[in-house]
Image 1 (cartoon, helix red, strand yellow):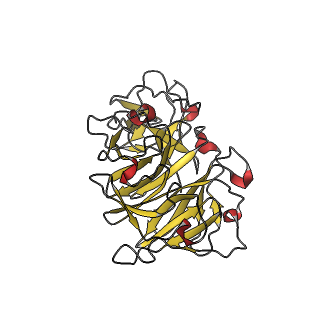
Image 2 (cartoon, helix red, strand yellow):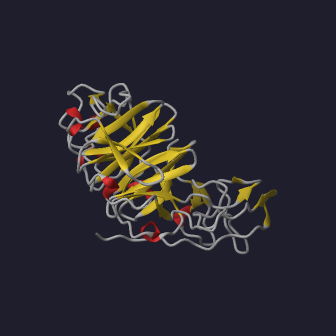
Image 3 (cartoon, helix red, strand yellow):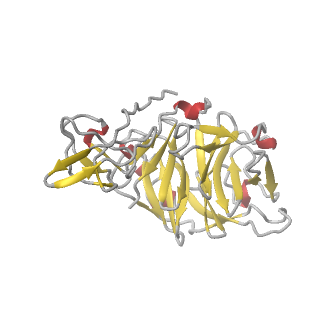
Length: 332
Protein backbone atom coordinates (compact mmCIF):
# COMPACT_ATOMS: atom_id res chain seq x y z
CA UNK A 1 0.00 0.00 0.00
CA UNK A 2 1.39 3.38 -1.02
CA UNK A 3 1.21 5.97 1.74
CA UNK A 4 2.39 9.58 1.74
CA UNK A 5 3.04 11.77 4.69
CA UNK A 6 2.37 15.40 5.36
CA UNK A 7 5.32 17.34 6.68
CA UNK A 8 4.53 19.92 9.32
CA UNK A 9 6.04 23.37 9.45
CA UNK A 10 7.95 24.79 12.38
CA UNK A 11 6.25 25.98 15.53
CA UNK A 12 5.43 29.66 15.91
CA UNK A 13 6.65 31.93 18.72
CA UNK A 14 4.68 34.68 20.41
CA UNK A 15 4.77 38.10 18.70
CA UNK A 16 2.50 41.11 18.73
CA UNK A 17 1.49 42.44 15.31
CA UNK A 18 -0.60 45.46 14.40
CA UNK A 19 -2.85 44.67 11.42
CA UNK A 20 -5.59 47.10 10.35
CA UNK A 21 -5.52 48.72 13.82
CA UNK A 22 -6.15 45.31 15.45
CA UNK A 23 -3.55 43.75 17.71
CA UNK A 24 -3.05 40.12 16.81
CA UNK A 25 -1.39 38.09 19.53
CA UNK A 26 0.24 34.75 18.82
CA UNK A 27 -1.28 32.17 21.10
CA UNK A 28 0.83 29.42 22.74
CA UNK A 29 2.32 26.94 20.32
CA UNK A 30 1.41 23.28 20.45
CA UNK A 31 4.17 20.73 19.70
CA UNK A 32 3.39 18.93 16.48
CA UNK A 33 0.26 20.96 15.78
CA UNK A 34 -0.91 21.88 12.31
CA UNK A 35 -1.76 24.40 10.90
CA UNK A 36 -0.37 27.92 11.59
CA UNK A 37 -2.43 31.09 11.70
CA UNK A 38 -2.69 34.52 13.33
CA UNK A 39 -4.78 34.99 16.45
CA UNK A 40 -6.50 37.75 18.37
CA UNK A 41 -6.67 37.05 22.09
CA UNK A 42 -6.40 33.33 21.41
CA UNK A 43 -9.04 33.30 18.66
CA UNK A 44 -8.20 32.72 14.97
CA UNK A 45 -8.79 35.83 12.88
CA UNK A 46 -10.22 34.80 9.53
CA UNK A 47 -8.89 36.76 6.57
CA UNK A 48 -5.76 38.06 8.31
CA UNK A 49 -2.75 37.88 6.04
CA UNK A 50 0.67 36.48 6.85
CA UNK A 51 3.31 39.03 5.84
CA UNK A 52 7.06 39.14 6.19
CA UNK A 53 8.17 39.22 9.80
CA UNK A 54 4.94 37.90 11.33
CA UNK A 55 4.88 34.61 13.17
CA UNK A 56 2.01 32.15 13.11
CA UNK A 57 0.62 30.48 16.20
CA UNK A 58 -0.28 26.85 16.37
CA UNK A 59 -3.00 26.01 18.84
CA UNK A 60 -5.94 28.43 18.88
CA UNK A 61 -8.17 26.17 16.81
CA UNK A 62 -7.15 23.09 14.84
CA UNK A 63 -9.77 23.85 12.21
CA UNK A 64 -7.99 26.94 10.90
CA UNK A 65 -5.06 26.93 8.49
CA UNK A 66 -3.25 29.10 6.01
CA UNK A 67 -4.62 28.86 2.47
CA UNK A 68 -2.85 26.08 0.59
CA UNK A 69 -1.99 24.40 3.91
CA UNK A 70 1.63 25.56 3.57
CA UNK A 71 3.18 28.10 5.89
CA UNK A 72 4.25 30.67 3.28
CA UNK A 73 4.38 34.47 3.41
CA UNK A 74 1.36 36.07 1.75
CA UNK A 75 -1.27 33.44 2.37
CA UNK A 76 -4.27 34.29 4.52
CA UNK A 77 -5.87 32.53 7.46
CA UNK A 78 -9.14 30.73 6.66
CA UNK A 79 -11.32 28.20 8.43
CA UNK A 80 -11.32 24.79 6.79
CA UNK A 81 -14.50 23.90 4.94
CA UNK A 82 -17.19 21.59 6.27
CA UNK A 83 -16.05 18.00 5.95
CA UNK A 84 -12.36 18.95 5.77
CA UNK A 85 -9.71 17.77 8.18
CA UNK A 86 -6.41 18.93 9.66
CA UNK A 87 -3.68 16.53 10.67
CA UNK A 88 -2.55 16.22 14.29
CA UNK A 89 1.14 15.60 14.81
CA UNK A 90 3.66 14.08 12.44
CA UNK A 91 3.98 10.53 13.79
CA UNK A 92 4.59 8.01 10.99
CA UNK A 93 2.46 4.86 11.26
CA UNK A 94 1.49 6.16 14.70
CA UNK A 95 5.04 5.40 15.84
CA UNK A 96 4.28 1.68 16.14
CA UNK A 97 4.37 0.47 12.51
CA UNK A 98 0.58 0.37 12.41
CA UNK A 99 -0.37 1.20 8.82
CA UNK A 100 -3.91 -0.16 8.92
CA UNK A 101 -5.85 1.68 11.62
CA UNK A 102 -9.52 0.85 11.90
CA UNK A 103 -11.86 2.46 14.42
CA UNK A 104 -11.56 4.95 17.30
CA UNK A 105 -13.35 5.37 20.62
CA UNK A 106 -12.99 7.65 23.62
CA UNK A 107 -13.37 7.20 27.35
CA UNK A 108 -13.22 10.61 28.95
CA UNK A 109 -10.25 12.34 27.31
CA UNK A 110 -8.49 9.10 26.42
CA UNK A 111 -8.58 8.23 22.72
CA UNK A 112 -8.36 4.53 21.77
CA UNK A 113 -7.56 3.03 18.37
CA UNK A 114 -7.78 -0.45 16.88
CA UNK A 115 -4.89 -1.61 14.72
CA UNK A 116 -5.57 -4.25 12.10
CA UNK A 117 -1.96 -4.86 11.05
CA UNK A 118 -0.77 -5.39 14.60
CA UNK A 119 -4.16 -6.70 15.81
CA UNK A 120 -3.94 -4.66 18.98
CA UNK A 121 -5.58 -1.88 21.00
CA UNK A 122 -3.80 1.46 21.43
CA UNK A 123 -4.20 4.83 23.05
CA UNK A 124 -3.37 7.87 20.91
CA UNK A 125 -1.69 10.90 22.37
CA UNK A 126 -3.64 14.14 21.91
CA UNK A 127 -2.16 16.06 24.85
CA UNK A 128 -0.07 18.95 23.49
CA UNK A 129 1.50 19.63 26.89
CA UNK A 130 3.39 16.37 27.37
CA UNK A 131 6.57 15.10 25.76
CA UNK A 132 4.92 12.40 23.63
CA UNK A 133 4.37 13.55 20.03
CA UNK A 134 0.75 14.16 19.04
CA UNK A 135 -0.76 11.21 17.20
CA UNK A 136 1.70 8.72 18.71
CA UNK A 137 0.22 5.35 19.75
CA UNK A 138 0.91 3.32 22.89
CA UNK A 139 -0.20 -0.31 22.94
CA UNK A 140 -2.64 -1.40 25.64
CA UNK A 141 -1.42 -4.69 27.12
CA UNK A 142 0.34 -7.38 25.13
CA UNK A 143 -2.56 -9.60 24.08
CA UNK A 144 -2.22 -11.40 20.75
CA UNK A 145 -5.32 -10.96 18.58
CA UNK A 146 -7.10 -9.63 21.67
CA UNK A 147 -6.85 -13.06 23.29
CA UNK A 148 -9.75 -14.41 21.20
CA UNK A 149 -8.12 -14.86 17.77
CA UNK A 150 -9.87 -11.80 16.33
CA UNK A 151 -7.53 -10.91 13.47
CA UNK A 152 -9.77 -8.37 11.72
CA UNK A 153 -10.86 -5.78 14.31
CA UNK A 154 -13.13 -3.23 12.67
CA UNK A 155 -15.34 -1.32 15.12
CA UNK A 156 -14.78 0.30 18.52
CA UNK A 157 -17.04 2.28 20.86
CA UNK A 158 -17.39 3.15 24.53
CA UNK A 159 -20.33 3.30 26.90
CA UNK A 160 -19.20 4.73 30.21
CA UNK A 161 -15.89 3.06 31.01
CA UNK A 162 -16.58 -0.03 28.89
CA UNK A 163 -15.03 -0.52 25.46
CA UNK A 164 -16.88 -2.60 22.87
CA UNK A 165 -15.34 -4.11 19.75
CA UNK A 166 -16.59 -5.90 16.65
CA UNK A 167 -14.46 -7.68 14.06
CA UNK A 168 -14.70 -9.45 10.74
CA UNK A 169 -12.77 -12.50 11.86
CA UNK A 170 -15.23 -13.75 14.50
CA UNK A 171 -18.12 -11.48 13.45
CA UNK A 172 -19.27 -10.95 17.02
CA UNK A 173 -19.44 -8.32 19.75
CA UNK A 174 -16.77 -8.22 22.48
CA UNK A 175 -15.92 -6.19 25.54
CA UNK A 176 -12.30 -4.99 25.69
CA UNK A 177 -10.23 -4.73 28.85
CA UNK A 178 -8.62 -1.28 28.86
CA UNK A 179 -5.63 -2.53 30.87
CA UNK A 180 -4.76 -5.83 29.17
CA UNK A 181 -6.34 -5.37 25.74
CA UNK A 182 -8.02 -8.78 26.12
CA UNK A 183 -11.50 -9.24 24.64
CA UNK A 184 -14.46 -11.11 26.13
CA UNK A 185 -17.16 -12.28 23.75
CA UNK A 186 -20.73 -11.14 24.38
CA UNK A 187 -23.41 -13.57 23.30
CA UNK A 188 -23.13 -16.52 20.94
CA UNK A 189 -24.95 -15.24 17.87
CA UNK A 190 -23.11 -15.43 14.54
CA UNK A 191 -23.08 -12.64 11.97
CA UNK A 192 -24.95 -10.58 14.59
CA UNK A 193 -28.06 -12.61 13.84
CA UNK A 194 -28.68 -10.70 10.59
CA UNK A 195 -26.15 -12.21 8.19
CA UNK A 196 -23.78 -9.23 8.52
CA UNK A 197 -20.24 -10.57 8.25
CA UNK A 198 -18.51 -7.25 7.51
CA UNK A 199 -19.17 -5.01 10.52
CA UNK A 200 -17.59 -1.57 10.42
CA UNK A 201 -17.83 1.40 12.79
CA UNK A 202 -19.37 1.36 16.26
CA UNK A 203 -20.69 4.31 18.26
CA UNK A 204 -22.90 4.90 21.28
CA UNK A 205 -25.59 7.43 22.08
CA UNK A 206 -26.34 7.06 25.76
CA UNK A 207 -26.61 3.31 26.38
CA UNK A 208 -27.56 2.48 22.81
CA UNK A 209 -24.80 0.86 20.76
CA UNK A 210 -24.90 1.42 16.99
CA UNK A 211 -23.07 -0.47 14.25
CA UNK A 212 -22.80 -0.02 10.49
CA UNK A 213 -22.61 -3.03 8.21
CA UNK A 214 -20.76 -3.06 4.89
CA UNK A 215 -22.44 -6.15 3.43
CA UNK A 216 -25.96 -4.97 4.13
CA UNK A 217 -25.24 -1.24 3.79
CA UNK A 218 -27.32 -0.52 6.88
CA UNK A 219 -27.32 0.92 10.39
CA UNK A 220 -28.04 -1.35 13.37
CA UNK A 221 -28.42 -1.27 17.11
CA UNK A 222 -26.68 -4.04 19.07
CA UNK A 223 -28.19 -5.70 22.13
CA UNK A 224 -26.00 -5.40 25.23
CA UNK A 225 -28.70 -5.83 27.88
CA UNK A 226 -28.06 -9.38 29.08
CA UNK A 227 -26.41 -9.18 32.48
CA UNK A 228 -24.53 -12.44 32.07
CA UNK A 229 -22.92 -11.43 28.75
CA UNK A 230 -24.53 -14.39 27.00
CA UNK A 231 -28.06 -14.96 25.74
CA UNK A 232 -28.91 -12.52 22.94
CA UNK A 233 -26.04 -10.10 23.49
CA UNK A 234 -24.55 -8.96 20.22
CA UNK A 235 -27.77 -9.44 18.27
CA UNK A 236 -28.34 -6.66 15.74
CA UNK A 237 -31.59 -4.89 14.96
CA UNK A 238 -31.78 -3.01 11.69
CA UNK A 239 -32.70 0.66 12.09
CA UNK A 240 -34.14 1.09 8.61
CA UNK A 241 -36.34 -1.18 6.52
CA UNK A 242 -34.78 -3.12 3.68
CA UNK A 243 -36.03 -0.62 1.09
CA UNK A 244 -33.21 1.71 2.16
CA UNK A 245 -29.82 0.49 0.99
CA UNK A 246 -26.31 1.92 1.12
CA UNK A 247 -27.58 4.55 3.56
CA UNK A 248 -29.63 6.10 0.74
CA UNK A 249 -26.51 7.79 -0.72
CA UNK A 250 -24.88 4.91 -2.58
CA UNK A 251 -22.16 4.58 0.07
CA UNK A 252 -20.68 1.12 -0.46
CA UNK A 253 -17.69 1.46 1.89
CA UNK A 254 -18.88 2.79 5.26
CA UNK A 255 -16.14 2.90 7.86
CA UNK A 256 -15.95 4.99 11.05
CA UNK A 257 -18.89 5.91 13.25
CA UNK A 258 -19.06 8.46 16.08
CA UNK A 259 -21.65 10.34 18.11
CA UNK A 260 -21.72 13.95 19.26
CA UNK A 261 -24.76 14.47 21.43
CA UNK A 262 -27.62 12.69 19.68
CA UNK A 263 -26.07 12.97 16.21
CA UNK A 264 -24.26 10.11 14.50
CA UNK A 265 -21.39 10.83 12.10
CA UNK A 266 -20.16 8.37 9.51
CA UNK A 267 -17.14 8.26 7.21
CA UNK A 268 -17.16 6.46 3.89
CA UNK A 269 -14.81 6.10 0.94
CA UNK A 270 -17.29 5.50 -1.88
CA UNK A 271 -19.90 8.27 -1.96
CA UNK A 272 -22.48 7.51 -4.68
CA UNK A 273 -20.49 4.39 -5.46
CA UNK A 274 -17.46 6.38 -6.55
CA UNK A 275 -14.09 5.36 -5.19
CA UNK A 276 -12.14 7.20 -4.02
CA UNK A 277 -14.63 9.83 -2.95
CA UNK A 278 -14.13 9.86 0.80
CA UNK A 279 -16.58 12.05 2.71
CA UNK A 280 -18.24 12.72 6.05
CA UNK A 281 -21.96 12.16 6.71
CA UNK A 282 -24.55 12.54 9.41
CA UNK A 283 -26.62 9.40 9.92
CA UNK A 284 -30.29 9.54 10.87
CA UNK A 285 -30.88 7.24 13.85
CA UNK A 286 -34.55 6.79 12.94
CA UNK A 287 -34.28 5.62 9.33
CA UNK A 288 -30.56 4.99 8.74
CA UNK A 289 -30.30 7.55 5.94
CA UNK A 290 -27.06 9.48 5.49
CA UNK A 291 -26.63 13.15 4.60
CA UNK A 292 -23.33 14.45 3.31
CA UNK A 293 -21.55 17.08 5.42
CA UNK A 294 -20.09 19.81 3.22
CA UNK A 295 -18.65 19.29 -0.24
CA UNK A 296 -15.07 18.33 0.59
CA UNK A 297 -13.59 15.31 -1.16
CA UNK A 298 -10.98 13.20 0.65
CA UNK A 299 -11.37 15.60 3.60
CA UNK A 300 -9.29 18.27 1.87
CA UNK A 301 -6.09 16.41 2.77
CA UNK A 302 -6.18 13.56 0.21
CA UNK A 303 -7.21 11.02 2.84
CA UNK A 304 -8.86 8.47 0.57
CA UNK A 305 -9.29 5.77 3.19
CA UNK A 306 -10.95 7.16 6.31
CA UNK A 307 -11.23 4.37 8.83
CA UNK A 308 -12.14 5.47 12.34
CA UNK A 309 -14.13 8.23 14.05
CA UNK A 310 -14.56 9.26 17.68
CA UNK A 311 -15.57 12.38 19.55
CA UNK A 312 -14.20 13.93 22.70
CA UNK A 313 -16.56 16.71 23.67
CA UNK A 314 -17.27 18.64 20.50
CA UNK A 315 -14.05 17.60 18.76
CA UNK A 316 -14.36 14.95 16.05
CA UNK A 317 -11.25 12.82 15.52
CA UNK A 318 -10.52 10.60 12.53
CA UNK A 319 -7.80 8.15 11.53
CA UNK A 320 -7.02 7.32 7.92
CA UNK A 321 -5.23 4.47 6.22
CA UNK A 322 -3.92 6.47 3.25
CA UNK A 323 -1.74 8.62 5.51
CA UNK A 324 -1.75 6.46 8.65
CA UNK A 325 -2.39 9.56 10.71
CA UNK A 326 -4.77 11.23 13.16
CA UNK A 327 -6.96 14.16 12.11
CA UNK A 328 -9.58 16.56 13.43
CA UNK A 329 -12.61 16.98 11.14
CA UNK A 330 -14.86 20.04 10.87
CA UNK A 331 -18.47 18.86 11.08
CA UNK A 332 -20.37 22.13 11.69
